[in-house]
Image 1 (cartoon, rainbow, N blue to C red):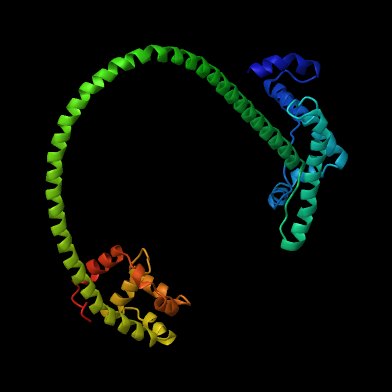
Image 2 (cartoon, rainbow, N blue to C red):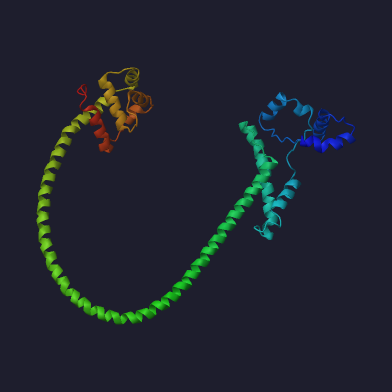
Length: 334
């Protein structure tokens, strides 16, 4: 093996026998003596506790360093590094104020986390990692806003350039206008010729107007038919109103015990199910079934909602759905 060949001289100087197994064991021992592993674990929750219980070597054979909350001086020092003079996005006059504010926000979150734990029994950890993320997020937002402002400046500069270009174009257009005035005179003569053609077209339009008047007479006849149909619809409505009033009075006789009795039916009579599903449709439920009807009747204000239902607000779609589902039903007469 290449490793054994490279370490053979070193092993011989250390007094290791020349056997391959001895040299390999020397290499393994040296690796174990010089290998340092750093395990970073968060104490939040039960994960660390479970790992220590399952792997006792984490406690017995490791040096444990606890990273506690940073003091205020450390918070200022860290913020000064990330938000210091190297950060050209922050003006020097406001740099110290920004650093103080970042420290204040982090410490305030820690204080309110204690109150949060006392009142709601929920733990919110404010770790140095949160502090660094807070500063990095601020720098990221600062970079984005700086980029946005620069883009707006470029847009403004582009707009000013276009205004200057438009001013130059306006001068050129004025020069062309003087030339075109001559052409306008020539076109005026052409317009007079066009007027003659327009007069001819006007005569044709008068003929079409007479045709339109004939169409108006046809429309008037159609309006008469519409009025007759409207009258028939109003008469049908007048016949339906007594039935509506009768339904309202019948609804007032219902009480909660009647609703409870209807809900208790596992398989209700067809007429009861049809009426219940009609109410489901009128109330706008998507699923039209006995299950939806029972859920609807379980509402505390079910009877009140029926008495206060806006019958004038029933849509034509609901009426069509009701007619499609039940008009041809064998038991619909019940």
